[in-house]
Image (cartoon, rainbow, N blue to C red; front, side, top):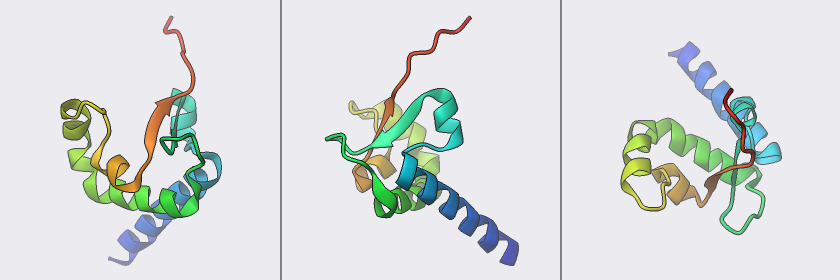
Length: 93
């Protein structure tokens, strides 16, 4: 139980800091995506924390919502008010 709390706290801290200050995790940077608010405003740490908490709790529903909803947004995106957007167009060789 203690190790799970430490791991969960580390995940929350990692996502909150990176998404709140850079709008991207290292994996999102690699794949050329980022999160932002619909108007293009920055996400900031509070909203990043809410998105991360929602993502940890709702991740099993992510694919269902992305494929079913016309907006292609997961439930945690809708609740926290963020969008995931592509910022690069990489060619696959």
